[in-house]
Image 1 (tube, rainbow, N blue to C red):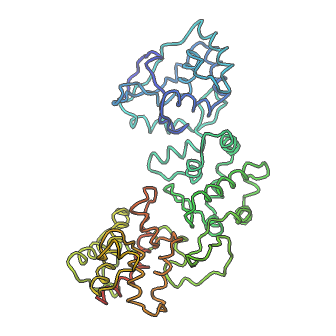
Image 2 (image 1 turned 90 degrees about the vertical axis):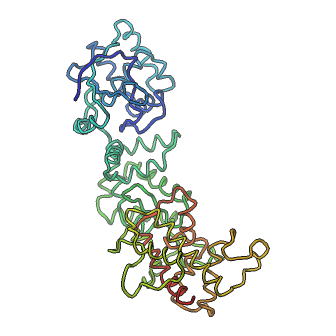
Image 3 (image 1 turned 90 degrees about the horizontal axis):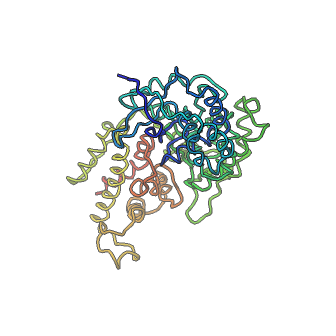
Length: 460
């Protein structure tokens, strides 16, 4: 139920979760965010308010009382509230482009100030959201109702559980407080739909090794975040050019040619490179047949398998596991629904691989590598890396080092590989809080390690 009340200007707070500007940390930051977004339009709105000496009676602001702070938070009308607060205290605009005009306008405002505002009061933010979304549909000059720009629309979609545009993920990844970034972002304001068409083009992955997922995750195939940041920034910089627009990038072929301009900055991985050989992420080797699950791992990074569990549940691919704990772990691998338990599945996979490897090495009384003998006496002692354990298991399973069945595992041991099945990725699930496991990656990682695990347990 909504009611209408009148409040003092001093009682009202701007929304620090404003979809138009993005989240801010304080009231001053919220005001400056609106100024940065609206600029001269706030001056136009202030002049319009002063001309009438009132706000539109048909457009009350919308508020709710924040239960945590007891403040009245404005969830519709933040531009109007910002203007009134700037007219009341023009020093809030100091250092911005509108500082001078607001100092002049504030003199007029002081003669007949507006300090009482009519507001529609909603019980909660959630009660107002359906109505807010319906209001932001028409464009205006800044005096009337101002529509959300593409970034604001994407933030709102994400907040309501819908997929945001990929450009939002890139903006949030790249944005900083530099004047240079603001120049790029402003120039791209009318082009975000075109930016999204480029980011959605398959060549972003095939040529450059960048994938922006619908959930906002950004994947760089070689794992080099700094190089990926440089590449994406270069693409956006190029798109600010006047000759790069929706017409020049209308066709897929046009977008492919545009993307190829940045091939020298590619973050493609080379999963077959030896750890002792420098990797050339721009090399154009002939495409290999996809004969094992991790030769082309990330192109189908989203789950494309019908299997919902981490490991197959029945059939020829099921193998026997001895030992109460290991058998229980294997049973959990066959029961766990990956799609709703990605984090649990990622840790379970790593634990099962490591404990299985330790079991075989212990039972076969495999000697510890000299490097670890001084500080460890058993394979399950702390300090022996997983890749060392796997390498020693492979010496038992494949003493000639020629079996093709274990080639995917040798690739996964590459210290430079960031494929879904690599040791680096498995290690990252434990230690990298920014690495989000995906269901498709985890089932494919199991498929890579399955022959190793099956052979390991058969050899016990």
